[in-house]
Image (cartoon, rainbow, N blue to C red; front, side):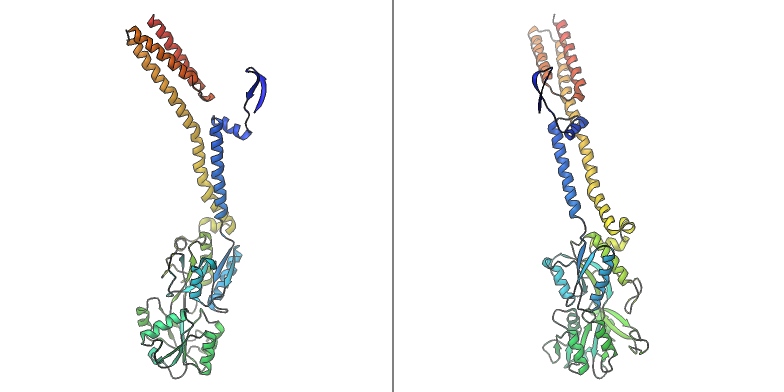
Length: 453
């Protein structure tokens, strides 16, 4: 405030306001209290929008739980990491013992793992923290054995068989197949929980009779070594079709003759195998933009032809125990959104968040602010209309009234209306309506004076 001399007398008080507040008052023709409230509410909304805009940004790093060193799981995860880095997202690849450890890490918030490669058929942890991003490949279960040709799995009864470490995917599938043949732990067959390196060495030196192996936990060097060994043979699941119908998460896979080595003709005949699909499992809070980016990387890595798949067969929107995420389902149906197709990842993310966050704020806030003067116009007009209604009613009653005492009462009522109107405070924009009301009150007073004479 400041003091000044003026027409209202020495040291009259004149209120001064900040330029922004004064601009709002003049633009919407409202008082300082309303202007301050509108400015404060708008500022709070914009601050909340900015905070949400910042927090909704996709992270620049993600963590992938893969498999043992040198395994196909780890190699694929490293390919993802390279592609993601080209898009501006750094991926940290963790080695693991396989699918079960990957699931455990994903289910544990403290582990801070975003994505894991998991074989279908592994029991998933309870809760709804995990979602599937689809299936990315077929994973064969290989059974290597020594000695005479083995026709049926029941021929392993009474022998030493490596089924993989406790909790591993290899052990899960091996036990399911052996159990279907009446072979269970504690019987005449010795089931060993050795790692794949120890199993490979034992097979070659004759310490064990057979070993189940999956590429999730075996390096490509170990698999090549076993497939090229003269003393070790790859089991042909000639009953594969029957097994796949009884164990629904296992599919029949064909290993064509010569698929491993054309020159050495390995294998020397077509081999029927069994195996599950491999899924990309993610946490439910993985940013939608990163879901698109990961699936784009998965498409680049897995859509080429291989021994157990045709070109374009993977990735595919097939879920098993874990439900497919909404973002993944949308990606498989329509691909990446338009902005992510035409703009770099970081720029598309910024533009998308601007559209999601600030456009709704503008759409809501601007009409809301514009409604403020309309609201005050309505309230002011309602107050003035109320006095007009009282004035019209009084005029009609006075013209029809003959009793002098009642006429005097109506004159007093007119004075009351005049006093109420004189005390009314309105903004300058509505001054014409107020002055018009006053003129009409004077008109009725003159009419009352003439009729009452």
